[in-house]
Image (cartoon, rainbow, N blue to C red; front, side, top):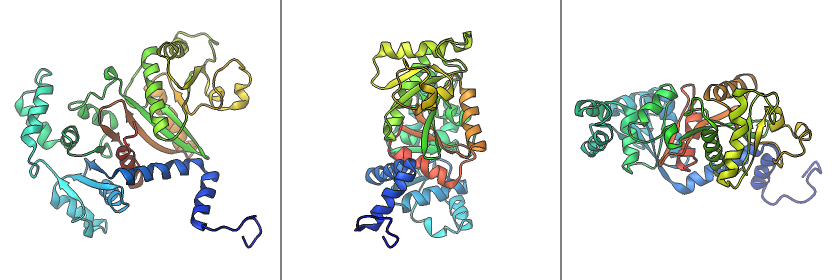
Length: 351
């Protein structure tokens, strides 16, 4: 106000600063909205990897930020030692530490798991080892039985391996319509890329499902979905057998009667650049796409990591969508803040 830049008196300076930051970086308002929803939900989030200091810091921050209750899977002595090493020794009494030794539900968990796996080559001894000794499976069983509202895992193992373990308990696979959606935040824009986790080489029907799941995630994040099926070709040229499924996927969505914008196939620049879109006046997107559905998991992974390493984009995800319960799988390179963000998404049931 002293400089004359503000034309009217600012009554609430804090609110003014929030509004100003939102105008400068729209992605910031999205994260604030998600945080507010998490505080309102007060979810019990299970942190599966209590032996990792990053996970412990995220769990402490989740609880101290008022988001809800952190349930940490691990041995109490180990967790206490790691918290003390991290300068958070006073947090031991705040967290609820859960493991196979102190739960009263292990037999219930094992019965449930045996019923799922007995015709898939696992005997009762195998099931006991999984339920009692594998933290990812144990945490998934907690979630399946309502002993938590959301699950965060994956910080210590590769995401594909963690997903395989989760599938012992849930149907989080391509056959059942699960999808991994990664959010890229860069220069005030947010773009979702899918599938970054589940589908290795999706066909046109899978691609349509990926688009639908991604649209659900976008709406959870406060975005109105605009989907582009991206390829190296644009609307049939140059012709290629590899691009054919991307060309056919929009037709599948038309037949399903979805309620969001979609178009394709097209190159990434046409999807994201409004000037490039002007060259195709018949295309149906009303603005730059905010969801890119890519041909395969490897191209999704390459795109995300390239933007992260070369472009400096902030990456959130992959967000697991299409599963009955709220599960988020972190990257093994995640920081404590990244894990916290995934916990907040789990609390809000994004996906």
